[in-house]
Image (cartoon, one colour):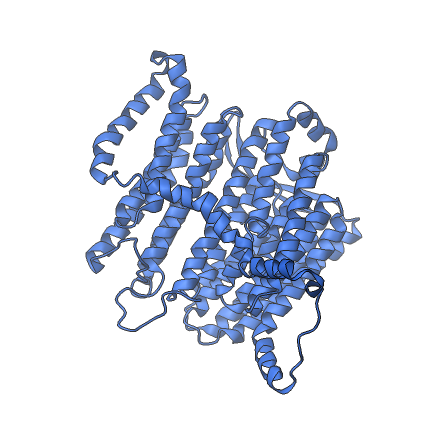
Amino acid sequence: MSLLLQIFIFLPVLGFIISLLIPGNKETLLSKIAFSTVGLHLASFQIFLVYWLWKGHPTLNLKEIVIFETDHYEFFVDFYFDKITATYLFVGSLLTFLVTIYSRYYLHREPGYKRFFNTILFFYLGYTITIFSGNLETLFIGWEVLGISSFLLIAFYRDRYLPVKNAVKVFSIYRVGDVGLILAMWMSHHLFHENITFLKLSNYELVHEHLQAHSWIGIFISLMILISAAAKSAQLPFSTWLPRAMEGPTPSSAIFYGSLSVHIGVFILLRTFPFWEHQLSVRILIATVGLLTSIVATTIARVQSSVKSQIAYSSIAQIGLIFIEVAAGLDYLALFHFAGNAFLRTYQLLVSPSVVSYQIREQFYNFIPRQHTLEDSFPKRLEYTLYMLSLKEWNIDSFMYRYLWNPLKWTGRKLNFLVMNQVLYYLIPMYLIGLFCVYNKDLIPETVLHALPIGFSFIGLVFVLKSFTERIHARMSWLLVVMNHFWVALAVAFNENFSFNEIHLYLIGVAISGIVGYWILFNMKQREGTVDLNQFHGYSWKHPKLALVFLLACLGASGFPITPTFIGEDLIFSHIHENQFVLAASVALSLILDGLAIIRIYARIFLGPHVKSVYEMAYRSS
């Protein structure tokens, strides 16, 4: 029975590949491929579900393929099926099938028709891999696919300023969740000394044996999982990204941010529940996050003037309640609540344009005075305070900017003295000295040897901070991002057992992507004359093929699972010792900013309003 799980991965892959080969002017064929793929997936699952229930609903686990293996490390793809997977697959396949049919007519004659259905199938592939994942590494593959498809769909109207701007904002939050998951994998490798599967996590004796002597490590892993879940499910303090994501087409808003993608945070909590169920402090923290999010999101939803924003905050509030249910161990209730919330929000978002038209008509012909509400019973000062706080969304965005992004930008601006000549003349010789130290460790004093990894990782962090805040030279920003990976590899190379082959595995994808990306930026400079990062240029309309190739280069350079760098990132963290928190934090922050700097370069060069347009266009939206 376990071998049948391969079918559910193969069908979305096949549908996505076929949709890529269909010309963009074949609208009917494109839409038929999309809903036929998802419809066949739904039908095959219904048959499998009956067979699975008839066999006594056993837990299935399939170790599909070992991608990379050494004496102390194994990266393998593992598939897992139980009640959680069954619920998520039923809801996901049914809703995606309905939305693809709806989108066939909703997006008729839209210039990006092919791009939309390609991205929807790509999203569905990532969603399927995520819910079938049997370990954190496999989950991370699907997790990354969901992240990039979210970015592409929010920026679907790529000739407008605000969709592109909000897509970058949402991706920045996703990147925080990505690194939280990477750190959880890093420490779980040291805790279990293997690539732990979810099947083994359900073994109470095994988990209890390892956590008994390493309780703080267990809390750290749980907190990283919570950060990833909160970022993906828009819980505090990451709540404001969800309404910003509504800039995409209504069908994508329904399938992503109303029903499926926004509930993946709940999925990872349910999947890892056996690991943290006996950590009372973690359960209290998860419930507290859910409770605070529900209260804050409910107050914000009540003052929204946009129907999509109101639905978004209402969904956030319900997911907060699901967090409380998961923390309380009510897994069946959480799954039922997830399904109900997903169906309701999808319906609300799909009918929201019609509801707005209906309400506009009704307010003229059937005016109803404002009803008395609970807030009217509060003291007026409290009522007005709550109203203003809700109207300002409790200043959550300001909080994130003040304490997360602004300090990083301030630090990066202090590095404006760095120019390319200095990078080449001073830091490349320093890198060669670092390589000499790696291969001659016996000549280095012990104290210096322990400090070198932190020092080299800090240099890489400086590079990517400069790239993150660079506003003029796109090519220098790109080179700094690529060089950051080389400095990270050098820093980790001082730890034992990090072989030459493993360094190659990590850097080969970065090197190839870096060369391709730099060539495209150079080519764009020759053709257009300006590729600065101070504004959006919108060159994808004029150079669509170069835009696509550069996007692939960006994905390769940021560790997306199309190059060996994806495995390499997990590999380098497996070589960072459990007591090297400073090194791990420095590398993790580098990877966060690395992805942000790369996607920012892509967005600024190829997305947004065309810089040479002769027509007036809105720069910002109210």
